[in-house]
Length: 131
Length: 296
Image 1 (cartoon, helix red, strand yellow):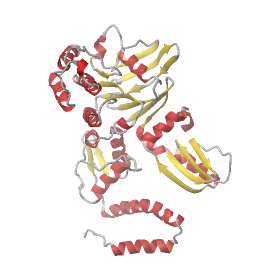
Image 2 (image 1 turned 180 degrees about the horizontal axis):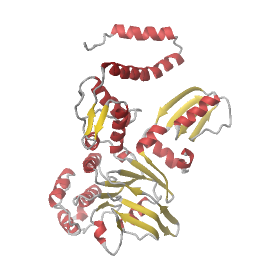
Image 3 (image 1 turned 180 degrees about the vertical axis):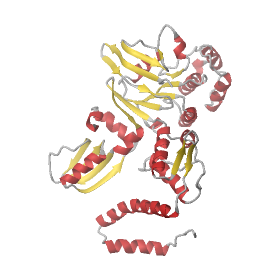
Image 4 (image 1 turned 45 degrees about the horizontal axis):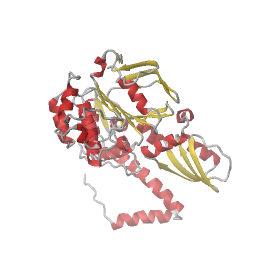
């Protein structure tokens, strides 16, 4: 599994791995039950240290997105749709918080910020998967 | 599984420099970067491990065996690339490898040839006609062709051009996939191995001042900017503090502690930036103080 990792981001490699693997799981690209590459295999393929992948997997396991089976490696967990939504919402919150703080420091009112987000959503209709 | 190596109170004394006492070890499956400025004792540590110099005190175990200088069997599972590349200068690379192979029961000619091809190393030239880069490559092939369980590297990629350096790193990533091998990699610049290393040990003036998981550094260190009217504040866990009027920029080795303090002090406009492993390493080496003590 080749991830798109860069040293030039302020996001640590471990977080980049977590985010990209999680995204593949939430989008269904990695369906429930499918097996993940071994920690050492993923580390070699993507040229990152073993401990980085290990900690990324541990974090994903804590989020119940993946689970390990002793001696067999890691597998994608069954995630109810409601939980997927919760995770996605949480992620959005994490990403919006600094942007909102910055906008507010730049002098925008809460109404300005809400309107800007609404405009963006209106201008660029997002593809939304039908159930 | 036995540890890849263990140092117990290892000391080496020179008239103007003392290394140690060193007490640290390396688990199989782990890459440990050994970072320090020139003259800090990196090479001496490697020489003690490989038996090139005899330590004046303490004990060293390699893969569970005492590194007994009179019985070289413990060396069979070590691959070493040192700061000097010693060959029979009139012999070809191939003949040098043939000579080295007799000391290693697990040597594979096939693997040696494969590595030479990957590194684009001419094996027919006499060693004395090889460029600096090709001498490093020959050392790498010699160190890897017996698939050792412990690799000891002293700035192995210095002198290599970027393409070969990349290929060498690829080989190291492949080697680590089995989980049985360990790499101890000394360097004064981190960037080479900032992705490969699991852990880092920082050595300054002959003493290891910090040993840590690489990802702990990137988790905990931050550069924090803020405004604060109060003067003469001692910031928790601060490694460096820069100040211009009320504007502050603090590099901290424990961002949570520092942020807690800043909030209690009523600092304004707090913003934090993550730091790369390389940036953190520079801070640690620049400070030359016991970061570990201020972290606890």
